[in-house]
Length: 581
Image (cartoon, rainbow, N blue to C red; front, side, top):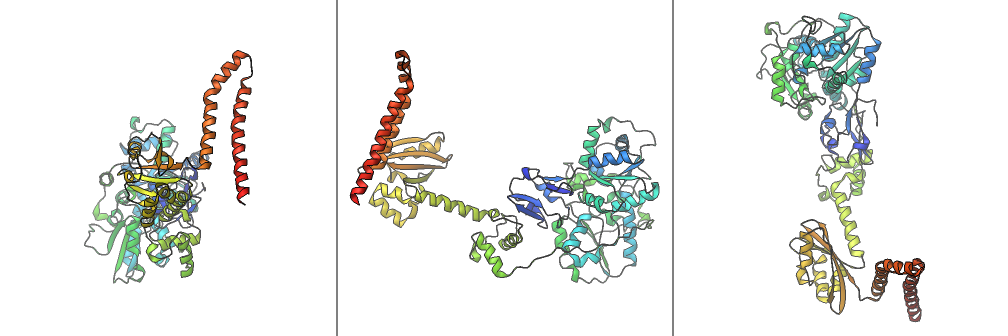
C-alpha cells in the first residue's frame, strides 16, 4: 500500500466487495489477490472510493504530523480554510479563528479570497475571449479528469490557478514568501495540489484532521472567548467567494444576476453528470463563449469526500449562503493578481485488444456465447467485455465474475454429490427434492431409477413418495439444531439415513448408506466395537485399579480384538479376490 499518495487502500481491511470499483467513475481500481488497489496514475482524486467503501479500507493520507512540523520550523504559518467550513463547524467564525490560532497559527484566512480572484480573472477571459467552450479550473478533480480522460478538451480549461493556489499566492504576496501555509477543507484533490504546487501550498489537511488536532490539544471552540477585533479573518473577510462550495456559486461571482436563461453560463456537479456533459463537446462550436462551472462532488464542495457533517445538502447550502455578504453592483470585480497557469494533457493510454483476445478472456470466465454475457456489473464493470479488457490488462481477476464463480461452485458441488459412494438428497421446505445423485435413486429401486432417467436429480419429486419416515426432513428444517438418524428397510436392504440442516427453515440434506453391503457391515461392526471400548473403558479402569492391575492392559486386549477382526476381514477379502482371479 502507498501511504505517500493522497488516498490509498488498507489491504488488510479490504473485504473483497468491489463496491469501490463499481462506483469509481474512471475505474481506477486494480484488484490483486481479492484486494482493491487504487491506480494512482489514473486516479482523479474524487474520493468516491473513500465515501463508498463499507469497510473503511480506503484511507485519506493524514498530514497532521507534517502540519505540526511546519509550525515548528517556520516563524509564521497561516491557515487557508475552505469556505465550506460554515457547513462543518458550529458557532461563530471568531471562535473558530481563536481555536485555530491557539494551535500556533499566525492567522486564519479564507480560501474564498482566492476564489474571488479566480472569478475576476475568469470574467476578464470571457469578456475578451473568442466563441468556444470554457471549463472552470476551480475544481482540481475536474481538471485531472479532463487532462487524463478528455485531453482534447484540455485547451478549454481556463488558464488560471485554482482558488486555493491563487489564495496561497495572495498570502505570500501579503506576508512574505517565507511563511508556511496549511489548507483545511473537505477535498482530497488539495493534497495533490500541495504535493505539486512548487512552493505555493505546504500542507493540506481535512476538516476531520483539524477537528482531531483541536481535540488532541484539548481546545474547545465553543468555550473560547475571542479577543475583541483580533480574531478575524486576515487580511480581510471574503465576500462573493464564499459561495464557491455550492454549485452556481462561482458564476455568481462572474456575472451579477445571472440566471438559468443565460445560456452562456452553466453549472453542473457530480462526476457522473460532468462526464455526460463533456461527452462530445470537443466538436461543439458555439457562436459565443460558453462557460461551464463544474464541481466533482454532488451539490458542490459542501459534500466533499472528507466532509463530516451529516446535514442535508439543502441545510449545508443554507449555511454557506447565510455567511455570504457582497454588493452585486461590484460584480465582476477587477483582477488584482496574475494567477495564470498552464495545463498539460496527460492522456491515459487506452489499449485496444483484438476480438480473439477478448473472446479468450471471456472464455476464462465461462462466457462462450453472446448470451452468456449477462452484463450484470457484479464485477464492478458495466459490461462483460469491459471486464474482459480489465482481465487482459491485469486489473481484474476471474474470481470477480459472480456468475462464473456461482457456476463453478455449483459444478463442484454437483460433481461431489454425483461421485459420493452413498446416496445424497437435498429437500426443500415443501418436502420436494431439489437435487439427488444416481446412487440415491438406485438404493430406492428400479422405479426410482427409471424416474431419475426421465427427471435428472429427481427434481420436484415428493420425498414422502420415495422414502418412509419423510417427516424426519420436516423436523430438521424446523429445528436446525437436530441431526436425525434412522435405519430403514427398503427392497431387502437396510439403509442408514442421516438427515441434517443445510439452510435453516429452507433446506435439509440426507446421506443414505446401505449397511447390509459387506464392506459397510464390517465397518459398522468395527465402529460398534470401538464404541464398546469407549463406553466400558472407565469401568475396566476402575476394576483394574481395585485389582492392582494396569488399566491399559485391558484396553490393549480389547483393541487387539478389533484389529484382529479388521485384519482377518481384509485377509479374507484378499483371498476371495485372488480366488476370483
